Length: 237
Image: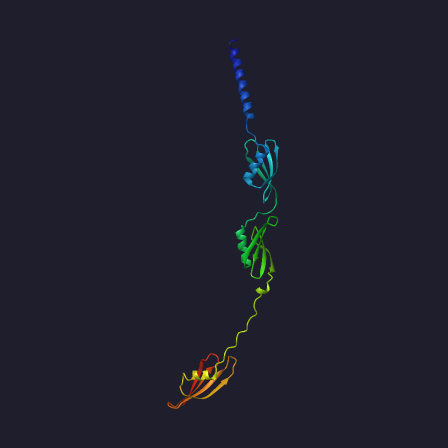
């Protein structure tokens, strides 16, 4: 019987060593602290951390993004985020880029973009456009692109920039009777018997009578007093 005593003692010592090793190995497991848990959340979801506290084996991390206020549960041992909960929705995030907002604004008002500003509280863009005679500020939703307001202000002009007074067009020149005779002779060369001018709304006309003794031809030629155009030719038998 005594020969089993050393064997039993050896088993007890070995068992104690195993238990001691397991207990020490558990103590050596790396546990996350509050700073590391907060960094894990911001790495995954962005935003900023408001608070982090240990509840049992999990860290409860409260963080804020543009979309709202959230709470995340982080396992202290594994570092995994086990749950995320929305506490309060603070507003939609902007969906339009700056370039898209500028394009929408230029579709409403002609000119050049002076500046563009984004309001996080209103979730809207304010686009300032400089035109020839006025400055326009277009407010539009950063989520949908809907135009919310257009404000315009005239640009004061200096004296040098004032438009010049319109110069009335010169009245169209009426050809002289001598010019009318010369035009008439292009149709019939001869001696002018009579030239008569008649005023009309479109400038008037000349009636020129010409006789050619050699050919025994006579014609009355109507000529537009401004255009110098031959309107009609009447031949006498």
